[in-house]
Length: 477
Image (cartoon, rainbow, N blue to C red; front, side):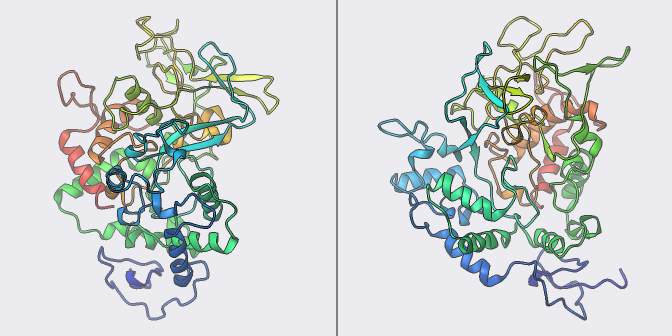
């Protein structure tokens, strides 16, 4: 470590720095950095915090903090929604735009009480909504709505894009979109947007997250940034959890920001080649299990690992989920070669062909080569509750794909995933162990198979102790 300069974590400026969990000095720099044009001005961030907390003129009374609650790590927790409802059903939080049915004479808010808000987005020009028979049923305004959770703004100092589907490439643009779509306001003056964005960039889940962000903004390559988590003081269980993380999570959540895909072979294996009917192509080699044919997408950092499909299963009563008591939309989509919408490419999800012939079964039938007849969910699926990134890109390969979220601060950001399908971190780890990791065997990840944790349950990739240890480690990030 000789020759490296170290600066206190508490000042928010780090150059090849190491810091303790409490932000104490490790070693003082003889020449502290005093000019950081790229870093957030404290005065600008403070002014932005005021804008963040106050409803802007011409809005429906909502401020940014109405849904990004400062006392809840700037997320929207279901318990908070319930508490506000019990105290004041007339609070601006309960606006008709997020009612279960905005046209109902007396609106109800069951979705909002799950921490979900309605997100209305335009269809890409090369997509249509279709019904089960394949008829185009796109609405005249070419817009659809989905239900999504409200993520914390912590660590938006990391480079974008932002939102679950990456539709915002800058925080200042995101501010305007939020005011337009959720506060029903007009154009926000540029200086106000810049101040709010500055405040958002100043919020971090931990001093370690700020350490990484500050060095990134100073231009240091991510690969040259020291690992701040190496300084965490962990007990034996947390150290074991870190080993489980390296085995099961690091491929997609590795590196210093904890949201960067570091195993490109795993990434590439999750982008499939489609048949015209929406089913994916399989490569069949005698003596080996069929393997999905992949088409690498090196410019996409979004992945479909099955969480929109999990919500589908919850809606159909197959698995219990936190959000399964409220109805989600049921969509099918047709993708075309271009905006003329004259030449179809594929329909997603494809009409299921099940092994049993029962349309409600989730096990796909096999073709004459022994390969599953299945769409990108790798199981039978009648509809999608949210097309994810494909609704922004128009790319069928990104159907139901979402951004890889940072795991920093994850212990304080329940419920989890884009639509709050999992109530606790333990629930999320259970799903990874039972449904997600076992389905990635063709990606190059070498993971064990353990017996079911309960009678009739699915095989697990993690043991009960490994899952407990992983949760403990994740809570420290």
